[in-house]
Length: 261
Ligand SMILES: Nc1ncnc2c1ncn2[C@@H]1O[C@H](COP(=O)(O)OP(=O)(O)O)[C@@H](O)[C@H]1O
Ligand SMILES: [Mg+2]
Image (tube, rainbow, N blue to C red; front, side, top):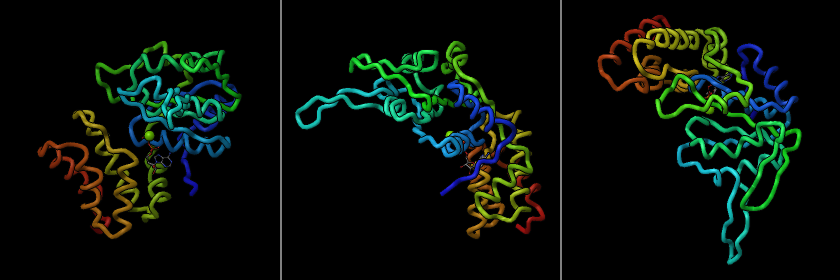
């Protein structure tokens, strides 16, 4: 299945230029705004496989580069996903890189500068990245937990493409393309999200993403009532505070009104 990526501005061109110049890329932007979709799209466009690694705070450098494992009485070195990606000349995508511990990320340093080399100290192996290898990381800067920040020195190793939700017309096109929902319904869902995104600055929750609009539209396409779908997919995940939810429901009802609910 080929999934389309709707670009916001020049990010596809910049990504490709970074690939050609062997510059690692950092994608920033809110959850569900299209970061993963862009990387998948670029993999297809550039003809490179994409190896995705979801970062979390238990991730060790061995999880990235590999380890010795016992198989049938023998102890053999097994490449981790990062090593595999370097050897294959793949696009290695470290999703939510801010979740990983700094010491686990240190192994990336020699890959992100002129050396473009991975040192597998335990295996005694030095792997030079082929020209096609590319490192891409992503994180959501708005989701701040005081303990978790990327070091500025780490960030400066990358060209940063900052992403955001698409402009409303484009976002509605995405919802239609992803689900086949009628354009006026997609436009109302987007209007609802834009209103909540604008209102949410006073609150402290993640604003509704393009992803939740796509999910709501999927339910609508399969017969759900529009307000029920918006409630389940857009509103309910935002907040568990009853008063806030009531306020949001009013916003949603106003935005969806007329879409023959
Ligand atoms: N620019 C876009 N083009 C196409 N689909 C998009 C775009 N942005 C968001 N989407 C839709 O939203 C969903 C979530 O996007 P994703 O790339 O997974 O977000 P992120 O990785 O930023 O959390 C996608 O599966 C797709 O349906
Ligand atoms: Mg993602």
